Image (cartoon, rainbow, N blue to C red; front, side):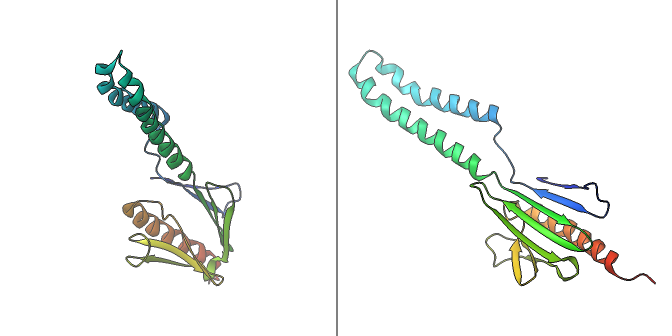
Length: 169
């Protein structure tokens, strides 16, 4: 699951970190580029020693560099980190975007509303937090099953955090 709950030093505080699934590790990337290069040059072996080889080679290298660029760009675009800090007093969500700049949202825990939009959002089972006059998405990059699990988990933890606010007795 590409999210993790941690408990910082202050006892009633909880922190949730969410990130996109990283399906292509560095070794897999290198192997894919090498395999693509090998397969793309196989037809050129028949042209060794001819002028036609030098005419086709730039196009093969251009295609390979396009694949390399696309994979690297995809890797940079997946460098998203969302951090949700949950305390009995407030909820704070910070999204660290891949191209710099952070987006922040904060609300009193008691007034925070969690919602799952099964359809009508950019993705099925879209999870949002609302409060303080705003509605923000959380975990939109997760798979549908992961968003369902996140909603259930976050719902329970918000319920427990607001229960601590209620007067006892």
